[in-house]
Image 1 (cartoon, rainbow, N blue to C red):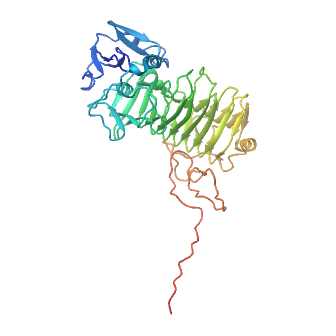
Image 2 (cartoon, rainbow, N blue to C red):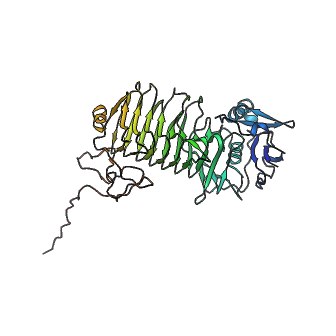
Image 3 (cartoon, rainbow, N blue to C red):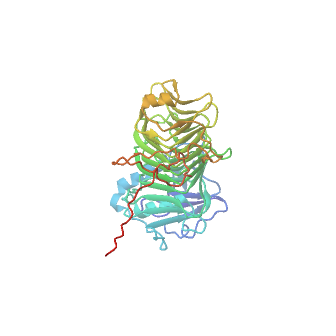
Length: 463
């Protein structure tokens, strides 16, 4: 019999009856979850219809309220919590956390086998009950221990709403060092989704089994700022497909760093057909590796991209831009775009799109034999034509990068030492170190372009 964790306090930010988590058969709540401090455990013969998987999945943050013996489905978890905060205000009481809360790194809300909470969602619900919607005064960590965490009540493994982290005191969602933590969306809309929460850091988590791995902002919501996604693995498979790694819709100041993307159905990062494109944002992707999938990046909005030291191998496109808004490459430095098929095009912008490139260099482009280095306005361009059009990529190459199976450069790869710093010379004219490898992996040892001449100290003999 499944067990539901239901909020049993009538004075907190979350309403009494709020269903935080559904534990599958054979999985018991933790000691704290059974303590009565916040929840009560409620066994049911079968999951309520609102908790059963929907087809097709959506990006709605569902909520479920247990009242008078019945389960009432709310359209939006975020709106439900926000309505309570707006209407009850100061009459709400913050629910204290457990006495043994780990405060060695600000505040650690731990979940997993033998930890305080059984799932990431109950850990975040406890955090919300403790701090409410007020701005964070300290950094909070939702830290997972080894395990695979499936779809929760909201329709995602973890759904964020109402919390107010800041750049100085963010919300960190990570895994304990040495622990493998997987968010399995179980065919949901997203593994990790947010409606209105900014200043979030996500580290060392694996995402699989959803339309989107991470959804910082829902389509149709306001722009959400300041997400950093670092050292995460996004992996799709025939059994657990993952269509898009990170969704860019309404996500501003979004940084994706040192992440792995394996076998995405569509793309590592980007939007999707039918999503709104009336937003302006800035996105950085750096030090990432993307293998497999239809394309690397797909976009149709006014997004300023900074792409640095990435390696991407895809079947059809590297950077693909559709629609009538401009493709804006604020910085495209030291990337390797490798063909996965003969039709591969490194960069493609629709006929109506303007291409604006501020800085691009040190890239290795390897289009397919029937593809192109770039297609702009329906015109196929080789590297020389691209240089003439944009005035960039003077040190870039259009050649086979000679990569191994993991997309790292092999011996004699032209990617070794190909990379360029943002500014190649100092004010005195001295060249900066030129030991940057293009792509996600740095093989070359650091070196300077020439030997510095230093004057030997003089030794004076006293007579």
